[in-house]
Image (tube, rainbow, N blue to C red; front, side):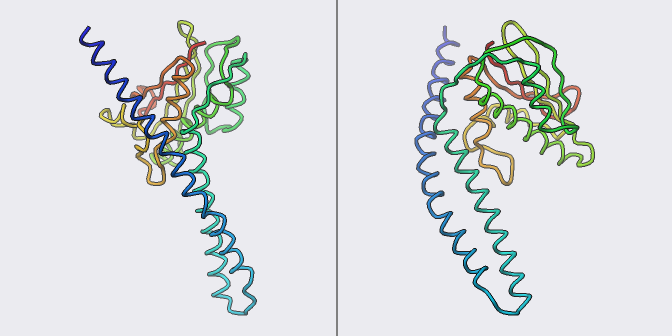
Length: 234
């Protein structure tokens, strides 16, 4: 009973913390989004208005414009991440053919992703939400594997049906996740990436929970890096 009480309090504190972050996310998104277009248009206007013959200055303007365009697009992606995290829309389940769903994911990455399908038939889930969650995990795994070995970045996606649950695992050959961070990396705004903001994995966790499932990370025995397990009720 004491263990259940501690677990209940921990869960309540976690939900309260996530709710607070969700209230903050749209405010931050709004403040970031507003100045982006004026910044981008101003730099474009300056670059296009130069008609002089100083090649060095023209090249500097062109490079500056490219950098601003890239960074503005990165900030727009950040705003979209804020939006996804803040909204957490309820899933709209549909009947999905599992091999077909996995084939679509495999087609996105080609030889960069090893796909193993150990089940057949159909399951009911929100195709777009689950697809986004898995793409997030695959992208993270690819980045970790490339950091470890750019020429042999091994990532594996496996799908299994176990006890009326659909289990997806994403494994990589990267450095792995330290065991003392296995829980904290699913907290909002916790990230190990130099260019990340720490919203991808919280969105993945929300998707899993909204599908009656869970997500966790452990060590990959076969590939040596991280192994993310994303489980949803079928």
